[in-house]
Structures are given as structure tokens and as C-alpha cells.
Image 1 (cartoon, rainbow, N blue to C red):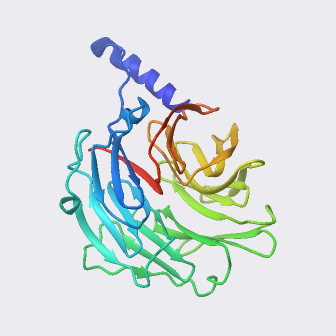
Image 2: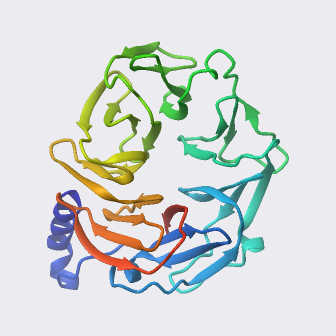
Length: 323
């Protein structure tokens, strides 16, 4: 609904001089499979075209995140790419876009990324977590996070939460019954022992970049943290989600099916199994199965399925608006 309302109001403003055509953001979707990182204009995907505008040969991609830059986590490196020379028709060579790369000791197979306002966090394992300034130079080291006091808890996840004092670490770990959430670092203390759900496995944290709120997936439940309170917002009955994406008031937990909520309404599906997902700033949702990329209009619930495109093997998704 946010996208529809925004486009309606903007359309009224532009109608007098340009007619009533709805503006569209120039967005590129990045999709990694086992051996390539491919790029697609999101408008073409929504129209049913699965033709990539460019590919990079890049193996062992574990996770992707994008904002002003494109961050790629492989099994052995964290890489940062400049997106300034991308267009809707072509992409630069991988070597030309690469700004810096940081080697990760002991590799990072199965790891994932989390972005804050000024830093990026690399989660390889409970005992191997790193943070790095987004504008770090190639010679700056990854800074290890001291997780010794809670690395034995399983499952466990960390993320970054922006505050006036900078990005603070957010922590969640499962207990024998229930789970624990805390905001670490300088600033007001926030810690909660939460009894629901009794089994908080899987456990995943995700920062909605525009909303500035942190979402926690604990077992079958979705929780929202705004800096001062943490509240349960939805619970899955059929889906078994494991990862999160979303923004602009909408959050999507996906894995075996999906659980979607906009804070007031909730939608759930028990199948198929999704390996990767991303919500674009125009509120279109992209979820990858083993065989295809499914495109949904997520401006209102229930989701509207637009296309199922034959793009097999996608393991990570993200995207960015062209500058």
C-alpha cells in the first residue's frame, strides 16, 4: 500500500506537466549461483524476462548485500564493489568494479553479512565474527568481535543496530527454553530473556535499512526491535522460515515457505523451499527456489505472484538503485 499511495500522490504532482505515467526506480538485482554473479534489471524480471545484462565469474559466494556499494562474501574473502558505472543495459568488468578485498582466515563457508549505518558485519561462526567500516581502505584489517562469553550458545546471531553513537552490536542466542536478546556496546543497556517460542531455532537478526528497525526470527516467530522495546509481531503455523528480508514496513521470513507481515496483516505459505530472497525499494519481492526465481508484487497483502522465471541454483540475492 505504501508504494501505491506514494505513486498516486507523486502521479498527481507530475500529471500537469508529464502526464500520469508512474515513475520507476532503476534497480538492478544481483543473483549468485555456484559459479557466477549475474545482474538483472528488476523491471525486465517483472515483465517476465530472465536475460542477464552481465555476469561475473565468482565462485563460492555465501552472501550478498548492497547499499551504496555491493558487498560480496565468498568462502575466503569479503569484497566491496563500486556500483556507479552500472547501467540498465550493461555492467562493468568485475576487476574494474572491485574496490577492495579482505581475506578471511579459516574461511567463511556458510557465513552471512549484516549492514549497519557505517559498518558491515561478517558472521562466519559464533567464534569468528568481524566488523569493518564501510569506507575502509584495502589495507585496513577486519576487526574481530569478542564473542567468547556467548559463542557456546547455539544457535546464535549478531547484527548491527544504528544509533547516534554509531553502530552497536545486537545479539540473540537460544537458551534451554526461549532465547536472549541484547544490545551491546556504549549506550543504554537493553537485555531481555524471552520465553516464547520455547525453541528458538533457527535464530536470525536482520536490520531493515530504511525503517531502522531490527527484526528477529526466533523459531517460528517474528519479533521487532526499535531501540527501546522488542515485540512479537507474527507467528508461523505452516511455514518454517530461516532467513529474513524486507523494508518499508514489510518483513519477509522465508525458508520452507514464507511468513510475511506489514505490522497489521500476515500471510503465510508452507511451500516451496526458498534459498534466497530480496525485497526491492518498489516493494517487489524476489524469492529463489532450486529451479526458479519467483517474482511477487508485495505492495499489498496477500502477495501477487507475477512470474516464475527459469533461473536455477540461486543461493544469494540482493540489489541496488542505480545512481
